[in-house]
Image (cartoon, rainbow, N blue to C red; front, top):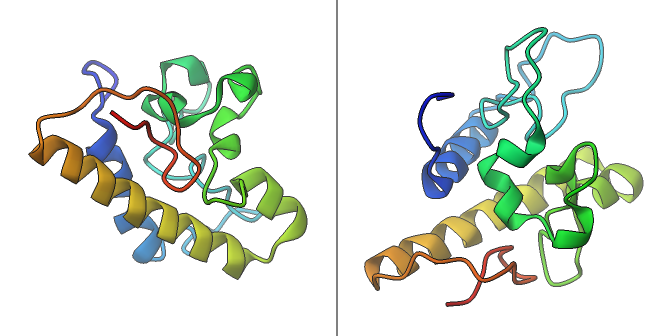
Length: 136
């Protein structure tokens, strides 16, 4: 998908399918897989040697401004009203808690985007804590 602009709804839907299909559990890597980074969602997935900047990623619009300069910015997307992120759950949660939080966030965000599209709204004004996407 490097040559065309990626659609946020499509990317999130594919990530949800990947997660539910056990995509992260199928890894044969020497280390545990990282959410978003080790899935087709990532611009650099299966691209050894080619590293595109996170600033080109469709998920950046979900990352709060104060975290966009982080090396792996998608880890800082707010997943819920408690402002948990992939990063905070790596530090203080279990793999099961992380997976559950991300699945719930994906379902909520996909639902919100679908509603916005159905109503003819598609602009993002900034992330909201419960979904990570903007209110129109």
